[in-house]
Amino acid sequence: MQIIPLSEGAFTIDKTKIFVPFELEQDDLQARPVGSLLVEVQPFVVVTNNDIILLDTGLGFSKNGQLQIHSNLIAAGIAPEKITKVLMSHLHKDHAGGISKRDRLGNYSLAFENATYYVQQQEFDYAMEIGFPSYMSEELDVLFRNPQVEWLNGNGIIDNYIHYEITAGHCKYHQVFFIKENNETIFFGGDDAPQIQQMKTKFVAKYDYDGKKCMELRQQWWEQGLQEHWKFLFYHDIKTP
Image (cartoon, rainbow, N blue to C red; front, top):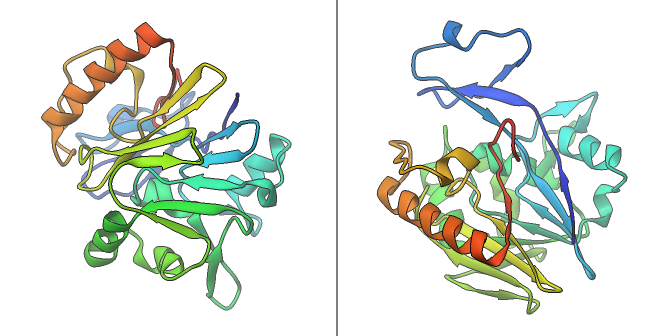
């Protein structure tokens, strides 16, 4: 399988939950509000024998009228319409901003016109109930009753090779993905496993729905992954995605 990171850049985020661009070579983290976290925002493409899979969709920012994630795909040699599956770990705005695109009249449509979107039903219901600032309900509403959406409930398997498990770690209905093909396993933990350093320590984050469970899952995944030679994808890792 081929893995293509789609970096949208580094950002800081504090209690306001606003993502502020951060230039690694010139900005000073200490000048940002106390408690600011420095994170990468980085969806991934995985190319398999049968699919071109997008794992989460980034912030949804646009440049010159084009979604950044579309620009990044094109730069990697992949036309956005070639994406066949969009796998969503959860629907927080930094992971789901690129789910949809808005035209000049303010109408939203799905950003990947030929893809099937895989979303936990309960995560969507919760997102629409809670809304801003964690969820952008007006951007997510396009999923409702959309024939391109495959609604998931709990754990399962997609097309006999993509396994998904609901964890309720980072948020109430968060899920993780295992893509297994030709004796190879790719693991995408979304915000349950966002950075490599968190896999190696007993780190409990206050911003997680169940921080202790996240910590325990990371230790379990890291140990199993090392034994079975998984490839880990870290959505928020600045240095080692």
